[in-house]
Length: 282
Image 1 (cartoon, one colour):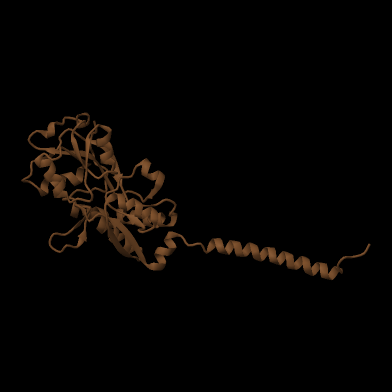
Image 2: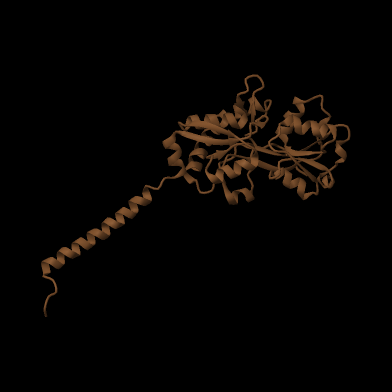
């Protein structure tokens, strides 16, 4: 039989083919390893970009004397970033814009009393919670806005932002929605007091402080409406696993050493929102 190639040449060609395949495999593997994650980019830039409202007292607002951005979650995030050796850059916007900005990559995370629920968890990742609360209703003090229970919300004017979980509750019970776009607390509260709106469904701790801050307004927290025990945490783009792991580890450390408890007591008039409230829900 006639040989097409001398044996030594055939061996050399086979060796070259094997080498090429191995090199290609290594190259492919190397390229996969070199794909940057969100956490890689954050570490390289040394900066964490954070969406927040700047209008939600006491979680994210501007100090009346200095006009500096501060609040419970603002300070939690600042301390968290410091421990992660990162600078923090806040971007102030309405709630709807926060979720859009996370998806587009404009910001890395959002921190603004954002409730953790199943619907949001389908689209986003949440860090472990550092605030536990429940829903209450802000109404007029003199007549409770004609509301005795959540069922009485039908036909009442409920104030809030369109995509919040609290507005979803108001919608469920047939309330007429009055939508605000990143309005300040006093605007919400004065509108209930004067009768422009009837009710604000929101977080108990936020409403407790709001009532204390505006003692001259005709507003109160409804004595009988307590619903939806919940937790809040930092929200980020789905699949940013390394970022979530690093945030979770840092939050855990801050909870265990009492830092978050101290920050909470400063902004929530002595209350520790990092622990689940002892409340009976009807």
